[in-house]
Length: 346
Image (cartoon, helix red, strand yellow):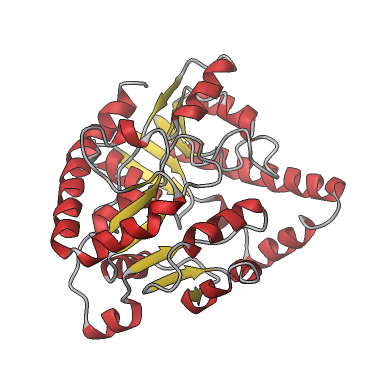
């Protein structure tokens, strides 16, 4: 049996997506998360060192990367995969990817804009050594092609049916998490944070809950009404809790991720899978991904609240549209269809 080695963070739903895609294609599949290479104490020390001046930060990054890559090579030699499939670059060094390529194929799935990654100096050098690069954003593809990269193609993995699915909630769950509008996401310290707060503020005063980290509080000075909707959550919510929140709500506003230019946020697919209607900030790739099927799009912030009210108040129209969207992505972005796209390039 052929083997796939995944290099993905464990707390990302994408891991479950790709794990199932390869397993259902007949591959023995294992995952490695570099965070498991460090003890809790080492992580705390590293975080403190990364706040110091650049020279110390660089030396710390170099030390971390050397340890991670040595562990990767040990796992590679022990497992002997036919394919190494990587989310972003996962602290891989270029020479490690070259080493992998001698005995296996390598492919990267980009989750962030490859040219705007902080504190990961080896990011692009490692990615460009891959046998193939899969992008969820057509603009990233164009930029890489301008740089001379030929082995790049567009890919979206759909959603995990094990993590996002309709479920009947208990009265307690509905009472705790129920709302018309739900949003789950951390905040940013820079202008993207202002933009995100501006977007969610469009729905202030409605029955909305925002689950996020403490950085949200920074923006309440500009958008004080958001405070009444905010639910503090410093850590990643468990997958099951996320699914319950989505099932307990009607509308999910999806703002464009900071690094996405034309591409779509994976929350769109997760929301549809859980039976909540996404209200999506316009991006060019929407027309390609949802060709021939309607999906509520925010072309201008001025129409967002009206659009939300329309679907919140019309249960029949909302549930009918959700089912159409679910049928569409379940067919077009099934595990088997995504696997065909991957293996056609490798």
